[in-house]
Amino acid sequence: MIRENPPVLFRAAHVLTLDGPEAEALAVDGDRIRAVGDLATLRSRFPGAREVDLGASTVVPGLHDAHVHLVNTADDLLHLDLSAAAVSGVKDLLNRVGARARTTEAGAWIRGGRYDDAKTGPLTRWDLDRVAPANPVIVVQVAGHWGVVNSRALDALGIGETSPPPAGGRYGRSPDGRLDGRLIERALMNVVYPGTARGGAALPAASPEDRLRGLERAVGRWHAAGLTSICDALVAPSDVDLLRRARERGLLTLRVGMLLSIDHYDRARALGVGSGFGDDFLRFVGVKAFADGAIGGRTCLLSEPYADGGGHGMQTTSTEELFEAVATVHRNGDRIGVHANGDAAIRLVLDAFAAARRDFPRPGLRHRVEHCSVVDEEILLRMKELEAVAVPFAGYVAYHGDALNRWYGPSRTERMFAHRSFLDAGVTVAGSSDHPCGPYEPLVGIQSMVTREGLDDGAPVGVSQRVSVEEALRVYTIGSAEADGVASTRGRLAPGYAADFVVLGENPLTADPHGIASIPVHATYVAGRRVHG
Image (cartoon, rainbow, N blue to C red; front, side):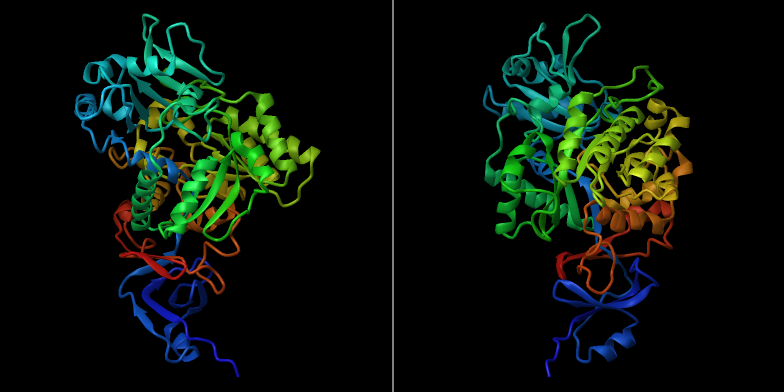
């Protein structure tokens, strides 16, 4: 007679399985859950099993961010933090850049990220010239779709007053017509992001060891926030190499899915890489493409003009190129996630999905609309029909607050980050922070979805889209697992599922909704192993 090894019993005041009634304990066998239920039954079933008493805490399934940027975050942690949380205004920002310039060799690049013009104030090339005259400087805006460079950087990049901007991008200009240092959309992407750069990213890359150091810091922070799984939504081959090295060194304790930049897709296909390639800790989810700009950057493609300044935003990829990319990826049986914020961009993406499905039927192959920010009834119906997955921002209301009402108008914010509408329409919706563009903490995202109020100003933003706490938890667990194609093993605390779970200091279902973001994360477990706490 073969006897099974006894599992470890984890007991807590509340175990929210999201697979049925609340439980008292779960039995963890290695990296899997063997059983969930009341403590007496599990003790009887597994006599002699070791017990871990989690006290008055609440256990929830591992939280899963379906659209975030791990490698970009790792790189950002090596540079200046110019976020609204780190600087008090433009003067403070410039002081930090100037201090870095005084300790940096002349001619070497200085980089800063997460600059928020709406909270910190406007910034131009001439401001940066004054504090760093001998160094090329680039400051990336928090949305990641535009940034500001100084004159030395423009020279280093070969950009002059008469230089034509790249397709899908533009150069900002001051009222007198001169370049003001802003690189917008493709003009920035070609400089900063190796995954999308066409012609090669212009900035020098950090050393592999430095990048690993940044990645280890990012993973530790995210575990401390309760994240057990993520999808890095824009990777290049060099990023895959970085993640593989991190795993070999035992630094990658976070489950990572990847969306490969469309610009590298042909090379990956030649190597036999496609959706689902990899294993439980590092796998390809699909391919990433772009249709428009950003919400916080005010460059997304809208059917109606912006409320505060007119204009309809930008289409960053031509219609012909977008349709060709979707058709190619779909025909190969791979998943594609297309960045589309504005309603005009989303309609274009859905047209491409419909054409691909019509020309190359692939039953069961579901594509993603990344961000999917501004929707209407027609878009919801089409997404349901096409089985498309929505991956909207969870924490943008909390972060931006009333600025969203100013930029887009209160009537339109009732149709933005439309978790309520997606759920009611039967559209699969995942949890996403898009960090470093938004707050990475999933509890901030959950509070934002539940209250629809700004954290700083308390402003209500599109309150018709509020969801319940349990629905928000399901978005950040089951919904994200479905978006990444791993719903059969993640998202629930159930027999056979991965032993990924989070130990919270308070039950979010009964907590004050305005305090969810402050609930302490006592411990985080991945594959049955404690990675935080």
